[in-house]
Length: 143
Image (cartoon, rainbow, N blue to C red; front, side):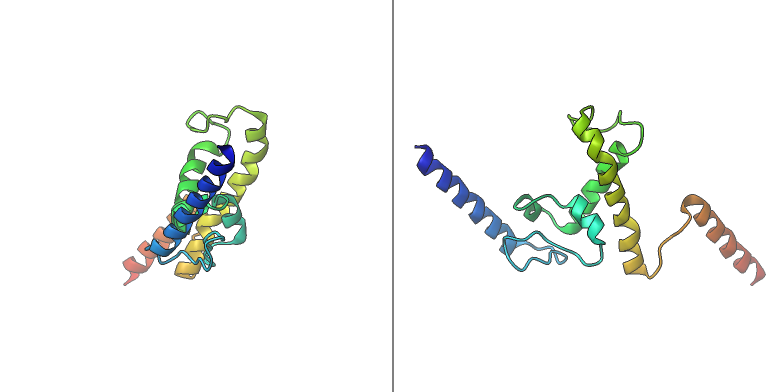
């Protein structure tokens, strides 16, 4: 019975993967083959390596959706306070050993995408934003 069940399950997974590939309505999914995960050149490789899960799970969402999901998780699981982190293994040594590298990879997603789309990245966080707003006010006041 197990010998017939395993090929049936594998066939089903392959069929679903191919179905998702050809019915995908996402324009940023650059999938040339159903056996490869989607890629987006506007994100750096360090970002994609950390946010896109292995095949075939990677086929269920677009690159932008995976990045958004990872950034949402990073907002709760990165840093010293893990009280908001929903991962059931957040207290294990394996999680604690890998989370810093994952957070560093997810951090590379936002700035590179914005820089590629808008031609420049916002540098300086809130202080940089405050300085830019003050400069805009000074220009408006002199006009």
